[in-house]
Length: 240
Image (cartoon, rainbow, N blue to C red; front, side):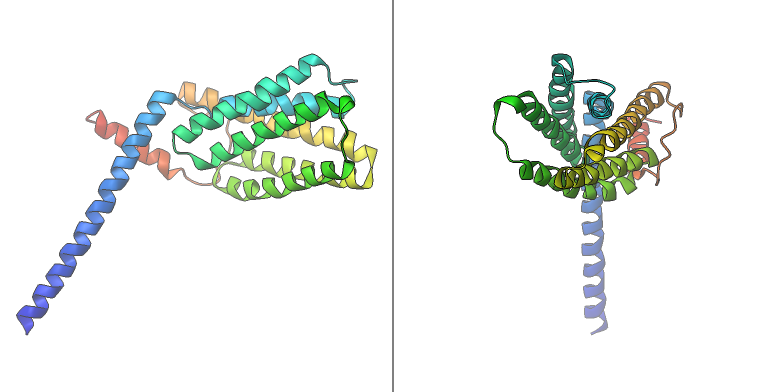
């Protein structure tokens, strides 16, 4: 009986060991794939952050009445940078198996394309004002989970998402109550703040990555274990 129990225990231990080994091997394989993808494609987040920033800054200047109207130049920047540029960045993040930035950049890319189409053809089309309220209200709902997800990133990115969430709330209230001050001055200031925060984050990533040290701190909220694992795997690949 004892020999039978010992045999069962050893089989269980061996099975548990094999499962742990398979899990470890799959994690190592995934990490190597991630390293190779990062090395091959580079970091596309600064591109998305810059496109996001320049679009919100220009719209913010218009909303706060620094610019009198949205001219062809601003529309071009919104379409190419805010729309196509961010979607391109999102596609590269998708290739690198990064779900969160993929969703963020593609969603905001579509937001700016929607903004472009509406305001560019605003005088030539019929629209119902209530739909604009629903549009901004929906975006407020979409941006809230991004605020929650930002707690795994850094303080600058968290503040950026909090401000843009506040912008959608303010714009939704302004459109529903027809309060001009919320639709112009307050919205414009919030757009400028989120744009400049994103611009800071863009140059922070570029400079810190280029010089391989902290030039512009983004104040991470937690330790990035994935990056540490990548560094370890790079050392293993290089035989160090």
